[in-house]
Image (cartoon, rainbow, N blue to C red; front, top):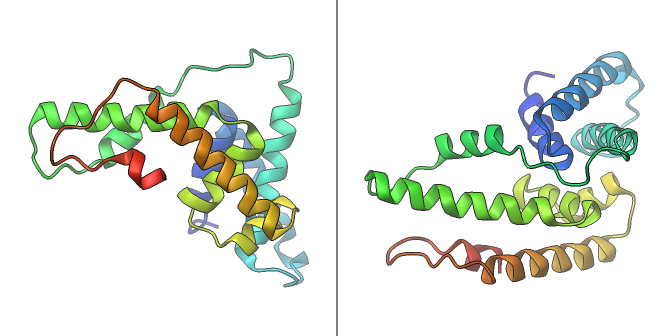
Length: 179
């Protein structure tokens, strides 16, 4: 359980958008996993089973908060984590600020995606799961995963290209990465 906790937390944080909700989802998921690990039949891979359980708790959390405000703008904790993980080739403060701005734009763009598209993008591009496993987790066909992933990437690309940020020379263009 300790080895999968960071991946499940990262997934729930991206899906729930609130640190408190993500922590609740992670706790519920870990308790369920601990209680039901003996019920794992091996019909799918272990990681598929884990993500499916976490996904169901994310959906339940989203349903519970249907009367909550539609947009939550508290990404500070997530952005701070990503700022700490960014490694710039030139350690100057200006370059670090620009990198943080790029990641902030990407995270803001991901948060604007519809939940169905966001979960596919997070599972496939951020968590790095194969399309077949994502299809099992979400409960749709492999072609539907590919279609949703294409739409999610397109929407994210459109959001990023409409922003005023232009990367400086020598800076990796994050827009090209998501293209």
